[in-house]
Amino acid sequence: MAARRLPLLAGALLTLLVALWGALGLLGLDVPLPRTSFAQQHGPLMALGFLGTLISLERAVALGRPWAYASPALAAAGGLVTAAGFTVPGRLLLTAAGGWLIAIYITVLGRRTGRDLAVQIMGAAAWYVGGMLWIGGRTVGDIVPWLAAFLILTIAGERLELARVAFLKRRTADGLVAAAALLAAGAAVSVWWSEPGWRLTGLGMVALAGWLALNDVTRRTIRGNGLPRFAAACLLAGYAWLAFAGAIWLAAGRPASTGFYDAALHAVFLGFVISMVFGHAPVILPAVLRVPLPYHPILYVPLALLHASLVVRVVGDLAGVSLARTTGGVLGEVSLLLFGVCAFAASRLARRAAPRPHGRERT
Image 1: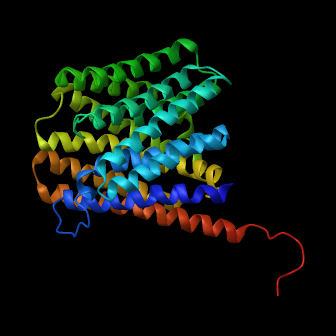
Image 2 (image 1 turned 180 degrees about the vertical axis):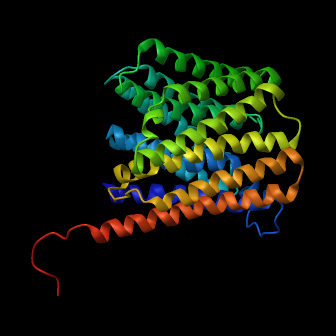
Image 3 (image 1 turned 90 degrees about the horizontal axis):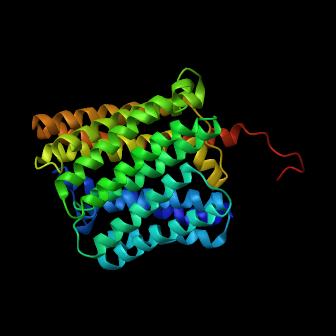
């Protein structure tokens, strides 16, 4: 079964590489773009084609039903089709993947209920609604609150699930649900009233970041060692970036300034979301692919580079220094690729160190 998941992961990674290549063009570098869609669709390729495939694949594995794999398959196919320049079929496939993810969560509802699941369903619904708006002619910029809501609410719901296991009080959990509802309401309002909608979304982001920073188990695990401490470092840094981006949207609405827009956008999708990917990868990838990915201190190198590069980029955005913005953007891409290299190396080392099964030696 794990081998059958490899094509889905390969599709996600190929979409990521295409999106990163397109981002180089957006940063102003003179790079050949085989398709203009590499740059024009950079945001949806990252949020839905790459991250959407990873999230729906993890959910499909957790559910354990063959039909659930249609969601990551649709997302991976949608990302590749969009990258190839077929935007209309790509939008349809990516949106269908979001709808299929909702079906996965509804099936899980038949097994259990909970606030964490409700928040994750809100995230999947944000993916689907944002996709429908995109199909209907809204620009990528118009659906940014929906893309952000999909990823933020999915992550927040998963963190609430872990906090629930740690015997979080019901009244405390209600605070996260309220903040999540605020964020979702902001995305909805943005469809008709852009400025109030973006501000409300920003308020929800700040509220969620504050709740997570105060109530997540990372406050305890950051004092530990090994993987728990690494994951906590990833998450706590991500919460800071989420609050930063939310504060910009709360203060400025939909930023008219290119600098503020770029700073807030990448604070969310790189500083928060990709930092979460780094922190969860050593747990999620072994569960999905059945390959070891043990913690190794070298993983701190791409993590530090990710956040340092984002600081450089944001300073460049806010100060209007294009060289800093470009440098930070390129280094951010390097951090993603470096994490992949480090993770692959750690996995290979773990396989070599694993005891060999007894039996007749191969000749």
